[in-house]
Amino acid sequence: MDIALVLQGGGALGAYEYGAVSELVRNGMRPKIVTGVSIGAINSSAIAGAKGGDIAGSLTELWGRLALDVPKFVPKEHHKNMSLLGNPNFYKNRNDWWNHKEWTSLCDTRPIHETLKQVVDWDRLNDTNNMRIAVTAVNVATGVQTTFSNVDRRMDTRHIIASGSLPPGFPSTEIDGEHYWDGGLFDNTPLPPMFDLLTEDETENLPIVLIDLVPTAELIPGNLDEVRNRMTELSFENRFWDQYGGHAGLLDHARILEEINKLVPPNHPMREESEYHRLMEYRACKNIRVITPIHQTMSEGHDFSKAGIAHRCQSGVAAARTFLEEFFSDAAPKKTKLRNKVRTNAAE
Image (cartoon, rainbow, N blue to C red; front, side, top):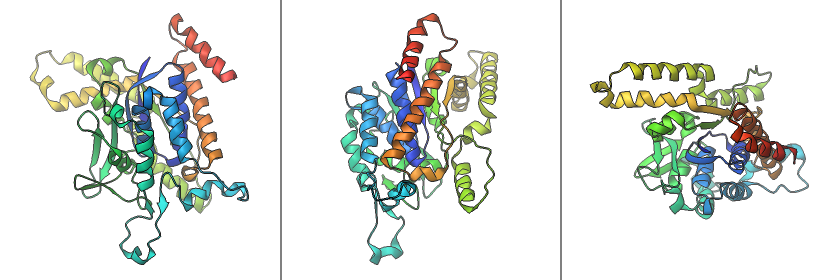
């Protein structure tokens, strides 16, 4: 079954996406389009540029490189903080202290450029017949969200890293004389870029699978650490979702747009206007399906320990299995084989 994927940002929480997407493709779901932001953009590049089309294998290679070996003498409660000392295949801390007054970041991101060059098949990523991909970033000077897509340009590591250039840890990424920061600063749920990539038929029929890394949590902080975590969560929660009042609100929005589309005569000049086309793209809201992992604080976002990544990957796998069961629960009998396969995987 063909699907579209929407991948959010959240640092090491992106291992949920690794597990969930791997489970989806193992059970016959084929991404035709993927949009991502921040770590979701990095995952998107491994998906669209998977060598030989092996998406699960590509994600496994990527996260195997990002995972940190923690020395045995380090107490378990400190494992999640080891990445603060650097991550050899992702970033390294700056040490040019003599130049610190001119710093605009704390880390050097050249390692992740090299990692993506090794993991991703860039010719395959830029082949729109294979998959359409879009990632988002924020123009530092203007504050405007920018979308980079293989539909309108040849993409390389800069476009992916621009989407994940979260300050002040990471430096801005320069592309064609413009500087970009993490797209999650503007919107951590890249659904509008997905709508832009859909054909008319896909707007009507293509399932859009959103992996919600930062689900809304009704939490009242009890100390300063929890205040800091909650503040970060509020910045990265699914604003698009909340804007329309959750899933039910999105379905109502799509239904109203369908009614408007029926009321506008076929030859009405309004149908030729770009704003009308942009509005009608949102009819695809009716096709959105959500995979929601268990809640974890945003402080877990820097836990790149092997154990932490393995735990989140398995949580993503479990969430995807639940999603698949629900997705096909009312499907036709021809889907029974797939449901049985999911059950078998869950039992293993």
